Amino acid sequence: MGLFLEESEIFKFAYSYYSTILTFRLNEYELARLKKCMKNIKTFDKNLRREVKIKVYIADEITEIYAIPHFMAFINFASIENEDKQALFEFWKECEEPLPPESAEYEYDLKDLKNPITYILNYHEKPEYNISDIYFNDNILNDSEKLRLTILSVVKDNEGIGRRACESSIRLRRVLLMYKCLLRGKILTKQKVDEICYPDIVSKRMFYRDISIINEIEDGKVVFDRNLKGYILRE
Image (cartoon, rainbow, N blue to C red):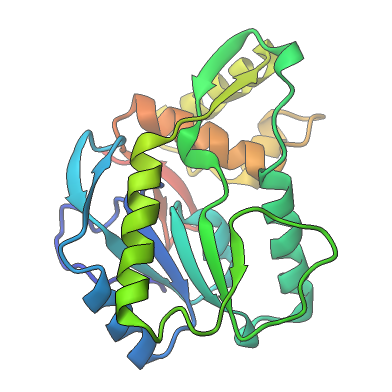
């Protein structure tokens, strides 16, 4: 299972869009350099409502790339099957598509749900369509100074840039049903949401956005449990 490099028990399960960098299948040398470059870098985490150190989440399962909130990622594509590569590209493409404002009744601040800045390593077959914030760069982890400046730049951009998005009353009902499920101590997954919202099917993008809204209401207490493979409401 994925592990945090930071040992603090306070933040052990605080996977946040504002303060987490995700890695997938990097080698020990690359991880050590990344950890060194991000040392003492802090950011204001909107979920925790205070300044915190940037943390690294080490993912070793493809599903964690979807499930763990993060603002930046370094992914080794050499260890990913072609089918999973295409699924990731399609997911990232979907995430950058704007929500339709004409159907809005309620407005939420979804700044943290734009595509994370993602560096893809060991892969050069770019998709036919363009995806914002996805970079193919094998050398990003080899230059410590450039890497640290890149992380600092992304952190500052995230602190200063916001994005507004709108949702309909249908979404409001769905979020309330999801919230009710968590309050009852149940495990929340996309499959579970599809069941309670049947016949409607929720996209992965919308599922993670809805989770973020509930998490903001609960001050960061909605966490992904690696053993249960779903979201729970921490007491």
